[in-house]
Figure 1: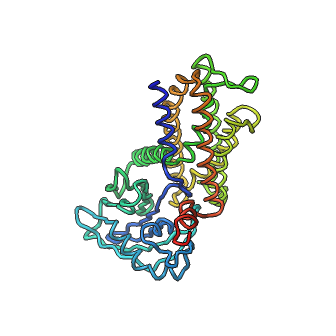
Figure 2: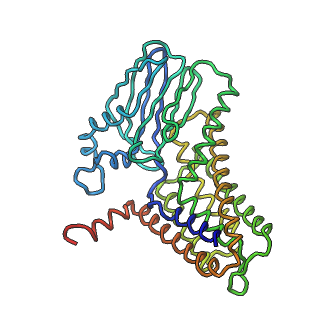
Figure 3: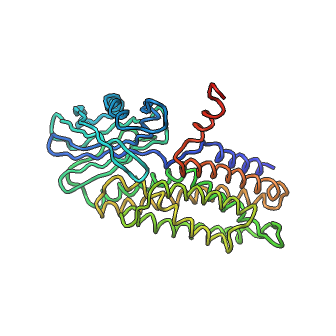
Length: 390
């Protein structure tokens, strides 16, 4: 009974988060140090700024250039009040130039040109990053600092809002190792807050402790058989998304973000419904292989905006991918033993599996509608059921 409560609580915790229509929130802070001077740009998603500042003046759900231009001062003040850079304990003075708009894989971003001066030539920069910290705890800032021929990266926000990045010459192996582990952490964090990826994985795990015979579910007799099935499924998913993650991060293939995010949502719907009404022929690992190709493009958006050189990108790519795998294994380590312990119960086969799968499919369908039509389900409900004239 305790195992049943634990698995139900886990499923509810996964179903509880709101439907996010886009990938987790990131900004891209790219700086170059030349003596005492700092130059660079800060790319911040307009959808995130709209959430924090209300940029959509007429409330029609579309941002125009005139609406954006009218709030440039507010955007600059908001951003600079949440970023500070210091060298040797002394603050560097930052200023912003005229803003532009650029398209990233997941939508439009404002580009905030930055320039600054430090009191002396810095040996290290201490960056304090608090952007959206009060409205989105999941937001992260991806930092790239270049000096001469070297470049260093860091991930800001969350539990590490202040970081000191050394400049000057650094042992290549030490630099690569530091960057590698930073992206391992970010990869694991990305999979844990990527609820669409998590629910897709859970949809594949729930029936792994059962086998369908003559149209009915029967429990798998041994844990080893269930674990082997999960190993095949996770391995297929890993190989597939690793391939497309690499292709997209290296710029070989770059499908539109809306298509990718919509396809990921569709994969959640299909995988969940397949547990109730089998629609996918063949073993689960084949479905994981197919849909994993799509999910890899979704992971790639995190690395695409940094403009890393090939060597630095390779280290970040391997670290990020390893973090994603560790995050997946953590989910498997929690869900699979609980599911196996409950596999023979009527509640699991007749209630938890079908009801949980249908709930996941419903959330996936909401995501699909949001992403395909670029609308918010919350806004649609508010407009149709909670407006003054409703």
